[in-house]
Image 1 (cartoon, rainbow, N blue to C red):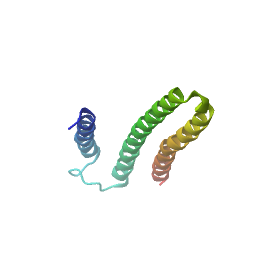
Image 2 (cartoon, helix red, strand yellow; image 1 turned 120 degrees about the vertical axis):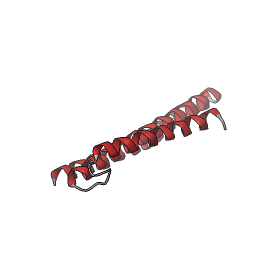
Image 3 (cartoon, rainbow, N blue to C red; image 1 turned 90 degrees about the horizontal axis):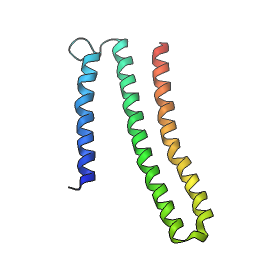
Amino acid sequence: MSRKKGLVALSALFLIMVAAPAMAASMQDGGVATGPEDVKMSIAFAAAFAMGIASGACGLAQGRAVAAACEGMARNPSAGAQIRGSLILGLVLIESLAIYTLLIGLVLIFLMWGT
C-alpha cells in the first residue's frame, strides 16, 4: 500500500472512531435518536462532516489542477493564456462543489431549527 493510500485509510478510520462517540454522546436513551433535539444534533454533525469531506476533496482537486496547469505552462509557454482560462473555469467548478455542500448543510440545519 502506498503512503498516500495509507494516509487516506488512516484518516477515514480516525473519522469513524471520532464520529461514533460524538454522536452517541449527543443522544440520550442509549444512543437512539428519539426526540427532535437528537435529530437536530445528528443533522448538524452530518452537515459538518459533509462540509469537511467536500472541502478536503476540493482542496486536493484544486491542488492537482494548479499543478497540472503550471506544468503545462512550463512545457508550452505560448499556450499559457488558454491554459490559464481553462484553469480558472476548472477551479470555479471545483469550488462550486464546496459551496453547494455548504448551502445544503445550512438549509438542513436552519429548516430543522425552525421546527
